[in-house]
Length: 621
Image (cartoon, rainbow, N blue to C red; front, side, top):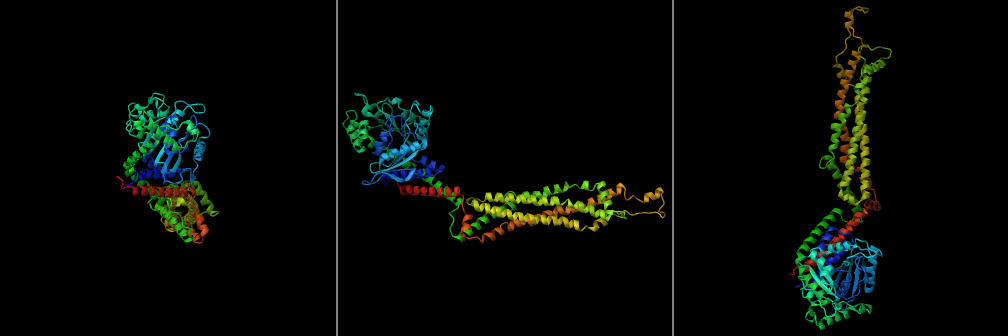
């Protein structure tokens, strides 16, 4: 059967892993795992003897001392028992590779680290200090030393400090997995104990609270604390433990903890008041009592802890797959990676065009809405007005009046009208070009694999946009050719089908009778020019219907189809000519993502190590 030390040590190691996770950036999983693990929070009023209790359990002088608020940041103290004969040492979470064997330096580092966050003032901070102590004289245990509860603010402290300290302490002790070590001095009425008051609020049943009575040797002569220790004054689920701290004289004389523990045992063994409780008193007994309780709590928590760790491992492995693995230094592998990333981007881009993702429908909108609307707005009414038709036809005839039909006038009117189609044709090309550029931008942003490489991201975007510019130029040339082709050759059959003005002239050209006038329409009358304008308008409308269908075909062929098939072809040609250093530069990852991958890999390693630790004792019942 696994020993109690193996179970407590397991939790300590997982908590140290959690500490490393937290110091490395922290995440929700870290917080959840830490909260799931049992720990012991040391709670008491100022000068209640908290520091002395902790030092008695550790067996070392290592905590700062003084008047007022000395503990101004939570101290997460992880005790790890090592084999006898080995040198004891301490390590700080913020100095993971430095071992402290001189515990006076540990005290100084706690003070200095506190000052680094709070400044050399009497301010407090909720940011914890993590300290691990490895010693053959301790039991495996995690203790959290919290600032002492106070009732009034003193000089140099803000008025809110009383409430700030209480809220900080409460944030630890209200967690259901927190064991409360409530420290109360024996020379004060237990009814005034700050620690017991707070413990009762967060643990009304007393199941998580261990009461510790300090300063028993300082009680007035003729009095004792038996009513408290034996549970008559205030009953808890767990027995009260009495502690005799070192006196100030012992501290001044640097009496070591081994001698102080021996002196404490002698006090209880020889005390007429507490002799019958001697076996259940003292700091050594308190440490063992807490360890035994932790063992039972840990056994109950192992299944939920395992489930939480497995869930965190799955999430981290999924995130690492999402972030991608480190890039090889081999040029061939790097080129392969770049091409794979290009294909991933190209796949998303095609999905936008083909309908798997939104955006491609906007191209259809250009053809179905924008182009027809632009054609309808062309100023043909102004161009084919009677006045403009008369002007153009007259200029085309010169000094010779046209005989039957003003052919040159017709041609000039038609060519002038068809020129108006250039604008909508080019606008359609530009509109589709804008949509394609937007789809490139969206596809770059949606390609998760590319987010690792901002340089490659911008390079691919630049190459894609250069290709789109070439496709746009070709698209404009093509649609302008379509318009020019319509202007270059007029459909004669159309005009042959139009009603012709047949000149009906009498035998006498000087005949001015009403009948003769009726048979000779004036070629320069308004109705004549209106008829010409109407004929040209009919032809232009026919051409407009043709272009309304041929322009989209040209745009799709020159721009959309080319973008689908050849968007990165020029880039592929260029990339194939690059050498190792140039390829490495393209795969220069975003530092934030590199840091995130390192964090995930480190967390994953620590979580797996924690799972292995649990598996090694999972057979414990």
